[in-house]
Amino acid sequence: NGLLFISYPMVEALRHYRDMESFKDLTVKCKRDKCPYADDCDSKDSCLEEPHYKNFVPTDSRPSLSNINGYTFEVWKELVTAHLCKMNYLVNDSFSMPETVVGQRQVFDSQLEKHILHRCPEVAVLSAFPLFVLDYFGVEKLISMLR
Image (tube, rainbow, N blue to C red; front, side, top):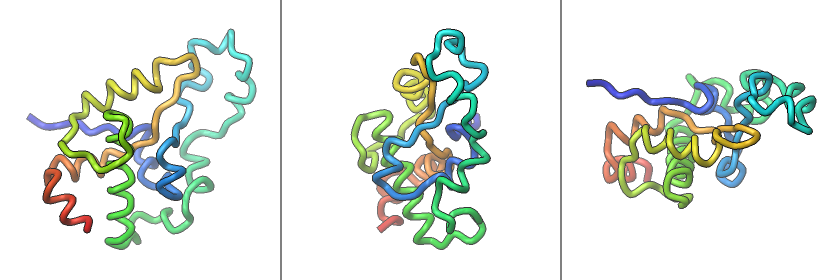
């Protein structure tokens, strides 16, 4: 009776953040050399030259986010808010705090439809940790905690 929460693409998604504006549309390619369209792709070479996700997150994020153990409550509030707004944008097309708890199936289906099942597959960067917090506390309690 447990729940599975998925980070897109992986745990580094929590640290892959600069600011709300750039985070809203932040995506990463997900297939690289396993892309089913690689043989017909005009940008195959540049895609394959891109570093692995774990390698470029530290340089594409705020330096202060490299050590999760050092996050202050204010940093956690900002990251939780950013990821929940992005999840709501992904699922409901509104970059704002969600009004309801959103299931992981809805998140996955939205990732498939909007990002993965495309000619150049990608995923919207999204951490599972803030989604777990939303599920655990519920919308009203979490929003009051983030104020």
